[in-house]
Image 1 (cartoon, rainbow over the protein chains, first blue to last red):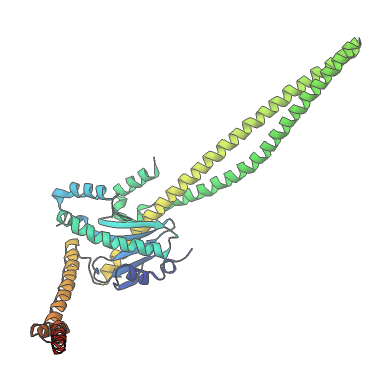
Image 2: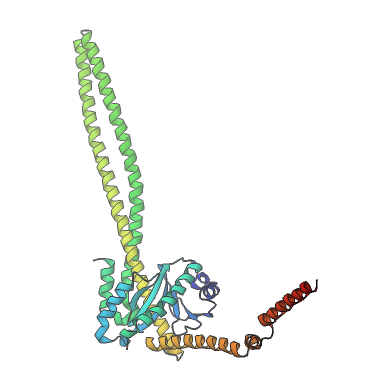
Length: 138
Length: 234
Protein backbone atom coordinates (compact mmCIF):
# COMPACT_ATOMS: atom_id res chain seq x y z
CA UNK A 1 0.00 0.00 0.00
CA UNK A 2 1.20 3.49 -0.90
CA UNK A 3 2.02 5.98 1.85
CA UNK A 4 -0.30 8.99 2.14
CA UNK A 5 2.48 11.23 0.81
CA UNK A 6 2.85 9.05 -2.30
CA UNK A 7 -0.90 8.89 -2.72
CA UNK A 8 -1.28 12.69 -2.83
CA UNK A 9 1.76 13.48 -4.97
CA UNK A 10 0.82 16.41 -7.22
CA UNK A 11 -2.17 17.46 -5.09
CA UNK A 12 -0.93 21.06 -4.68
CA UNK A 13 -0.74 21.67 -8.45
CA UNK A 14 -4.17 20.13 -9.02
CA UNK A 15 -5.73 22.19 -6.21
CA UNK A 16 -4.20 25.42 -7.50
CA UNK A 17 -5.77 24.69 -10.89
CA UNK A 18 -9.13 23.86 -9.33
CA UNK A 19 -9.21 26.85 -6.97
CA UNK A 20 -8.50 29.62 -9.44
CA UNK A 21 -4.75 29.82 -8.90
CA UNK A 22 -4.81 29.92 -5.09
CA UNK A 23 -1.51 29.08 -3.42
CA UNK A 24 -1.50 25.68 -1.70
CA UNK A 25 0.78 24.43 1.03
CA UNK A 26 0.94 20.80 2.13
CA UNK A 27 2.38 20.04 5.55
CA UNK A 28 2.64 16.65 7.28
CA UNK A 29 1.43 16.65 10.89
CA UNK A 30 3.53 14.51 13.25
CA UNK A 31 1.64 11.81 15.17
CA UNK A 32 0.72 8.15 15.30
CA UNK A 33 -1.41 8.18 12.13
CA UNK A 34 -0.59 9.83 8.79
CA UNK A 35 -2.09 13.35 8.56
CA UNK A 36 -1.36 16.04 6.00
CA UNK A 37 -2.49 19.63 6.43
CA UNK A 38 -3.63 21.49 3.32
CA UNK A 39 -3.60 25.29 3.61
CA UNK A 40 -5.33 27.20 0.83
CA UNK A 41 -4.26 30.80 0.14
CA UNK A 42 -7.01 33.23 1.21
CA UNK A 43 -8.61 30.60 3.43
CA UNK A 44 -5.74 30.02 5.85
CA UNK A 45 -8.15 29.87 8.83
CA UNK A 46 -9.91 26.81 7.39
CA UNK A 47 -7.21 24.23 6.68
CA UNK A 48 -8.17 20.79 5.40
CA UNK A 49 -6.59 17.70 6.94
CA UNK A 50 -6.15 14.51 4.96
CA UNK A 51 -5.74 11.31 6.93
CA UNK A 52 -5.52 7.70 5.80
CA UNK A 53 -6.52 4.44 7.44
CA UNK A 54 -6.78 0.91 6.02
CA UNK A 55 -10.47 1.42 5.31
CA UNK A 56 -10.60 4.95 3.85
CA UNK A 57 -9.00 8.26 3.02
CA UNK A 58 -10.63 11.09 4.98
CA UNK A 59 -10.51 14.81 4.24
CA UNK A 60 -11.57 16.77 7.33
CA UNK A 61 -12.25 20.44 7.97
CA UNK A 62 -12.73 21.50 11.61
CA UNK A 63 -15.63 23.95 11.74
CA UNK A 64 -16.32 24.85 15.37
CA UNK A 65 -16.30 23.35 18.84
CA UNK A 66 -19.15 22.42 21.17
CA UNK A 67 -18.27 25.47 23.32
CA UNK A 68 -19.05 27.81 20.42
CA UNK A 69 -22.57 26.48 19.87
CA UNK A 70 -25.33 28.74 21.22
CA UNK A 71 -27.18 26.58 23.74
CA UNK A 72 -30.66 27.88 23.02
CA UNK A 73 -30.56 26.93 19.32
CA UNK A 74 -28.43 23.78 19.61
CA UNK A 75 -31.18 21.33 18.62
CA UNK A 76 -32.09 23.54 15.68
CA UNK A 77 -28.44 23.50 14.56
CA UNK A 78 -28.19 19.70 14.86
CA UNK A 79 -31.36 19.28 12.82
CA UNK A 80 -30.05 21.70 10.22
CA UNK A 81 -26.86 19.63 9.92
CA UNK A 82 -28.85 16.40 9.46
CA UNK A 83 -31.10 18.04 6.89
CA UNK A 84 -28.15 19.50 4.99
CA UNK A 85 -26.09 16.30 4.95
CA UNK A 86 -27.67 14.65 1.89
CA UNK A 87 -27.71 17.90 -0.09
CA UNK A 88 -24.10 18.97 0.20
CA UNK A 89 -22.08 17.54 -2.64
CA UNK A 90 -19.28 15.19 -1.49
CA UNK A 91 -19.11 16.50 2.11
CA UNK A 92 -20.91 15.50 5.31
CA UNK A 93 -21.16 17.01 8.78
CA UNK A 94 -19.85 15.05 11.74
CA UNK A 95 -18.36 15.40 15.19
CA UNK A 96 -15.05 14.18 16.62
CA UNK A 97 -14.91 14.69 20.38
CA UNK A 98 -15.92 18.33 20.85
CA UNK A 99 -15.10 19.31 17.26
CA UNK A 100 -17.81 19.70 14.66
CA UNK A 101 -16.35 18.76 11.31
CA UNK A 102 -17.18 18.70 7.64
CA UNK A 103 -15.58 15.72 5.94
CA UNK A 104 -15.34 13.82 2.71
CA UNK A 105 -14.60 10.09 2.73
CA UNK A 106 -12.89 8.31 -0.15
CA UNK A 107 -11.68 4.77 -0.76
CA UNK A 108 -8.32 3.92 0.80
CA UNK A 109 -6.78 3.72 -2.69
CA UNK A 110 -8.43 6.92 -4.02
CA UNK A 111 -6.60 8.64 -6.89
CA UNK A 112 -4.98 12.03 -6.28
CA UNK A 113 -7.41 13.58 -8.82
CA UNK A 114 -10.34 12.41 -6.69
CA UNK A 115 -8.70 13.69 -3.50
CA UNK A 116 -8.14 17.09 -5.17
CA UNK A 117 -11.80 17.18 -6.23
CA UNK A 118 -12.90 16.32 -2.69
CA UNK A 119 -10.60 18.82 -0.95
CA UNK A 120 -11.69 21.65 -3.27
CA UNK A 121 -15.37 20.83 -2.71
CA UNK A 122 -14.77 20.50 1.04
CA UNK A 123 -13.10 23.92 1.26
CA UNK A 124 -15.92 25.60 -0.68
CA UNK A 125 -18.58 23.76 1.32
CA UNK A 126 -16.92 24.55 4.68
CA UNK A 127 -16.76 28.26 3.94
CA UNK A 128 -20.35 28.23 2.71
CA UNK A 129 -21.55 26.23 5.74
CA UNK A 130 -19.79 28.57 8.21
CA UNK A 131 -21.41 31.54 6.54
CA UNK A 132 -24.86 29.91 6.59
CA UNK A 133 -24.67 28.55 10.14
CA UNK A 134 -22.71 31.29 11.92
CA UNK A 135 -25.88 32.59 13.59
CA UNK A 136 -26.06 29.35 15.61
CA UNK A 137 -22.64 30.14 17.09
CA UNK A 138 -21.42 32.45 19.83
CA UNK B 1 -26.05 -5.77 18.68
CA UNK B 2 -25.05 -4.19 15.39
CA UNK B 3 -21.50 -2.94 14.90
CA UNK B 4 -22.65 0.67 14.67
CA UNK B 5 -24.75 0.19 17.81
CA UNK B 6 -21.69 -0.97 19.75
CA UNK B 7 -19.64 1.94 18.44
CA UNK B 8 -22.34 4.38 19.52
CA UNK B 9 -22.34 2.92 23.04
CA UNK B 10 -18.56 3.30 23.18
CA UNK B 11 -18.66 6.88 21.92
CA UNK B 12 -21.46 7.86 24.29
CA UNK B 13 -19.69 6.30 27.26
CA UNK B 14 -16.67 7.42 29.25
CA UNK B 15 -14.34 6.28 26.49
CA UNK B 16 -15.39 9.34 24.52
CA UNK B 17 -13.21 11.61 26.63
CA UNK B 18 -10.29 9.23 26.21
CA UNK B 19 -10.54 9.72 22.48
CA UNK B 20 -8.08 7.39 20.87
CA UNK B 21 -8.52 4.54 23.35
CA UNK B 22 -12.13 4.40 22.20
CA UNK B 23 -11.30 1.14 20.53
CA UNK B 24 -10.53 -1.89 22.62
CA UNK B 25 -7.31 -3.22 21.10
CA UNK B 26 -7.93 -6.66 22.60
CA UNK B 27 -11.38 -6.91 21.06
CA UNK B 28 -9.94 -5.97 17.68
CA UNK B 29 -7.24 -8.64 17.99
CA UNK B 30 -9.86 -11.23 18.95
CA UNK B 31 -11.94 -10.30 15.90
CA UNK B 32 -8.91 -10.52 13.67
CA UNK B 33 -8.16 -14.02 15.02
CA UNK B 34 -11.80 -14.99 14.49
CA UNK B 35 -11.60 -13.78 10.91
CA UNK B 36 -8.53 -15.96 10.31
CA UNK B 37 -10.23 -18.97 11.97
CA UNK B 38 -13.44 -18.50 10.00
CA UNK B 39 -11.48 -18.20 6.74
CA UNK B 40 -9.66 -21.46 7.52
CA UNK B 41 -12.97 -23.14 8.37
CA UNK B 42 -14.38 -21.99 5.02
CA UNK B 43 -11.39 -23.42 3.13
CA UNK B 44 -11.73 -26.76 4.95
CA UNK B 45 -15.50 -26.92 4.45
CA UNK B 46 -15.10 -26.12 0.74
CA UNK B 47 -12.61 -28.94 0.16
CA UNK B 48 -14.82 -31.30 2.18
CA UNK B 49 -17.81 -30.19 0.15
CA UNK B 50 -16.02 -31.06 -3.10
CA UNK B 51 -15.35 -34.59 -1.78
CA UNK B 52 -18.92 -35.14 -0.56
CA UNK B 53 -20.43 -33.79 -3.79
CA UNK B 54 -18.25 -36.20 -5.80
CA UNK B 55 -19.48 -39.08 -3.63
CA UNK B 56 -23.07 -37.90 -4.06
CA UNK B 57 -22.70 -38.02 -7.82
CA UNK B 58 -21.08 -41.45 -7.61
CA UNK B 59 -23.97 -42.80 -5.56
CA UNK B 60 -26.49 -41.29 -8.03
CA UNK B 61 -24.74 -43.16 -10.83
CA UNK B 62 -24.76 -46.35 -8.74
CA UNK B 63 -28.53 -46.02 -8.17
CA UNK B 64 -29.05 -45.73 -11.93
CA UNK B 65 -26.88 -48.81 -12.50
CA UNK B 66 -28.84 -50.88 -9.92
CA UNK B 67 -32.19 -49.77 -11.37
CA UNK B 68 -31.09 -50.81 -14.86
CA UNK B 69 -29.88 -54.15 -13.47
CA UNK B 70 -33.24 -54.76 -11.74
CA UNK B 71 -35.09 -54.03 -15.00
CA UNK B 72 -32.79 -56.37 -16.95
CA UNK B 73 -33.34 -59.16 -14.37
CA UNK B 74 -37.12 -58.68 -14.51
CA UNK B 75 -37.02 -59.03 -18.30
CA UNK B 76 -34.99 -62.25 -17.90
CA UNK B 77 -37.45 -63.65 -15.30
CA UNK B 78 -40.34 -62.85 -17.66
CA UNK B 79 -38.57 -64.63 -20.50
CA UNK B 80 -37.91 -67.73 -18.26
CA UNK B 81 -41.59 -67.81 -17.25
CA UNK B 82 -42.59 -67.50 -20.89
CA UNK B 83 -40.51 -70.56 -21.69
CA UNK B 84 -42.08 -72.47 -18.78
CA UNK B 85 -38.86 -72.44 -16.73
CA UNK B 86 -40.56 -71.71 -13.40
CA UNK B 87 -37.57 -72.70 -11.18
CA UNK B 88 -35.17 -70.52 -13.17
CA UNK B 89 -37.60 -67.60 -12.94
CA UNK B 90 -37.72 -67.99 -9.16
CA UNK B 91 -33.94 -68.01 -8.97
CA UNK B 92 -33.93 -64.70 -10.88
CA UNK B 93 -36.64 -63.33 -8.55
CA UNK B 94 -34.33 -63.93 -5.55
CA UNK B 95 -31.62 -62.00 -7.39
CA UNK B 96 -34.12 -59.17 -8.10
CA UNK B 97 -35.03 -59.02 -4.39
CA UNK B 98 -31.29 -58.68 -3.54
CA UNK B 99 -30.95 -55.91 -6.12
CA UNK B 100 -33.92 -54.06 -4.63
CA UNK B 101 -32.27 -54.27 -1.23
CA UNK B 102 -29.08 -52.80 -2.72
CA UNK B 103 -31.15 -50.02 -4.26
CA UNK B 104 -32.71 -49.13 -0.90
CA UNK B 105 -29.31 -49.09 0.76
CA UNK B 106 -27.77 -46.96 -1.97
CA UNK B 107 -30.68 -44.52 -1.82
CA UNK B 108 -30.10 -44.10 1.93
CA UNK B 109 -26.39 -43.42 1.31
CA UNK B 110 -27.31 -40.92 -1.40
CA UNK B 111 -29.75 -39.11 0.90
CA UNK B 112 -27.00 -38.95 3.55
CA UNK B 113 -24.58 -37.33 1.11
CA UNK B 114 -27.23 -34.84 -0.01
CA UNK B 115 -27.83 -33.92 3.63
CA UNK B 116 -24.08 -33.45 4.21
CA UNK B 117 -23.82 -31.22 1.12
CA UNK B 118 -26.64 -29.04 2.44
CA UNK B 119 -25.04 -28.80 5.88
CA UNK B 120 -21.62 -27.88 4.48
CA UNK B 121 -23.13 -25.23 2.22
CA UNK B 122 -24.94 -23.69 5.21
CA UNK B 123 -21.73 -23.80 7.24
CA UNK B 124 -19.80 -21.98 4.50
CA UNK B 125 -22.54 -19.39 4.13
CA UNK B 126 -22.64 -18.62 7.85
CA UNK B 127 -18.82 -18.54 8.13
CA UNK B 128 -18.64 -16.13 5.21
CA UNK B 129 -21.28 -13.90 6.84
CA UNK B 130 -19.26 -13.98 10.06
CA UNK B 131 -16.08 -12.96 8.24
CA UNK B 132 -17.90 -10.06 6.57
CA UNK B 133 -19.37 -8.91 9.88
CA UNK B 134 -16.06 -9.08 11.73
CA UNK B 135 -14.22 -7.38 8.91
CA UNK B 136 -16.73 -4.53 9.05
CA UNK B 137 -16.40 -4.39 12.83
CA UNK B 138 -12.61 -4.20 12.63
CA UNK B 139 -12.80 -1.61 9.82
CA UNK B 140 -15.18 0.60 11.82
CA UNK B 141 -13.06 0.24 14.96
CA UNK B 142 -9.86 1.01 13.05
CA UNK B 143 -11.41 3.97 11.25
CA UNK B 144 -12.75 5.45 14.49
CA UNK B 145 -9.38 4.99 16.12
CA UNK B 146 -7.63 6.60 13.18
CA UNK B 147 -9.94 9.66 13.13
CA UNK B 148 -9.54 10.21 16.87
CA UNK B 149 -5.77 9.82 16.65
CA UNK B 150 -5.62 12.23 13.71
CA UNK B 151 -7.67 14.81 15.63
CA UNK B 152 -5.38 14.35 18.64
CA UNK B 153 -2.30 14.91 16.42
CA UNK B 154 -3.83 18.02 14.86
CA UNK B 155 -4.84 19.51 18.25
CA UNK B 156 -1.42 18.72 19.75
CA UNK B 157 0.37 20.18 16.75
CA UNK B 158 -1.64 23.38 16.77
CA UNK B 159 -1.07 23.62 20.55
CA UNK B 160 2.67 23.06 20.18
CA UNK B 161 3.18 25.56 17.35
CA UNK B 162 1.77 28.33 19.54
CA UNK B 163 -1.01 29.16 17.11
CA UNK B 164 -4.49 28.42 18.30
CA UNK B 165 -7.55 27.28 16.41
CA UNK B 166 -9.57 30.43 15.93
CA UNK B 167 -13.21 30.24 16.68
CA UNK B 168 -15.45 29.80 13.68
CA UNK B 169 -16.86 33.32 13.60
CA UNK B 170 -13.38 34.87 13.77
CA UNK B 171 -12.21 32.60 10.96
CA UNK B 172 -15.18 33.46 8.82
CA UNK B 173 -14.77 37.21 9.48
CA UNK B 174 -11.10 37.10 8.56
CA UNK B 175 -11.69 35.19 5.33
CA UNK B 176 -14.54 37.51 4.37
CA UNK B 177 -12.48 40.60 5.20
CA UNK B 178 -9.65 39.29 3.03
CA UNK B 179 -12.07 38.69 0.16
CA UNK B 180 -13.53 42.19 0.55
CA UNK B 181 -10.03 43.68 0.61
CA UNK B 182 -9.21 41.87 -2.60
CA UNK B 183 -12.43 43.07 -4.21
CA UNK B 184 -11.72 46.65 -2.99
CA UNK B 185 -8.18 46.51 -4.35
CA UNK B 186 -9.45 45.40 -7.75
CA UNK B 187 -12.08 48.16 -7.83
CA UNK B 188 -9.44 50.73 -6.80
CA UNK B 189 -7.06 49.58 -9.51
CA UNK B 190 -9.80 49.97 -12.08
CA UNK B 191 -10.75 53.49 -11.03
CA UNK B 192 -7.07 54.46 -10.84
CA UNK B 193 -6.66 53.26 -14.40
CA UNK B 194 -9.65 55.39 -15.42
CA UNK B 195 -8.13 58.51 -13.84
CA UNK B 196 -4.48 58.19 -14.76
CA UNK B 197 -4.06 55.48 -17.33
CA UNK B 198 -4.08 55.56 -21.11
CA UNK B 199 -7.84 55.42 -21.16
CA UNK B 200 -8.09 58.64 -19.16
CA UNK B 201 -5.92 60.47 -21.70
CA UNK B 202 -7.93 59.15 -24.64
CA UNK B 203 -11.14 60.29 -22.98
CA UNK B 204 -9.74 63.81 -22.47
CA UNK B 205 -8.50 64.02 -26.10
CA UNK B 206 -11.85 62.90 -27.45
CA UNK B 207 -13.59 65.51 -25.33
CA UNK B 208 -11.32 68.15 -26.85
CA UNK B 209 -12.23 66.89 -30.33
CA UNK B 210 -8.74 65.56 -30.90
CA UNK B 211 -7.86 62.12 -32.24
CA UNK B 212 -10.05 59.05 -32.59
CA UNK B 213 -13.60 59.59 -33.82
CA UNK B 214 -13.50 63.42 -33.85
CA UNK B 215 -10.51 63.46 -36.25
CA UNK B 216 -12.07 60.78 -38.50
CA UNK B 217 -15.32 62.78 -38.89
CA UNK B 218 -13.37 65.92 -39.77
CA UNK B 219 -11.44 64.06 -42.50
CA UNK B 220 -14.65 62.64 -43.99
CA UNK B 221 -16.19 66.14 -44.14
CA UNK B 222 -13.06 67.46 -45.90
CA UNK B 223 -13.30 64.66 -48.49
CA UNK B 224 -16.97 65.39 -49.19
CA UNK B 225 -16.31 69.12 -49.51
CA UNK B 226 -13.45 68.40 -51.95
CA UNK B 227 -15.74 66.27 -54.15
CA UNK B 228 -18.38 69.01 -54.13
CA UNK B 229 -15.76 71.56 -55.28
CA UNK B 230 -14.65 69.16 -58.05
CA UNK B 231 -18.22 68.63 -59.22
CA UNK B 232 -18.91 72.38 -59.36
CA UNK B 233 -15.61 72.96 -61.26
CA UNK B 234 -16.60 70.64 -64.17
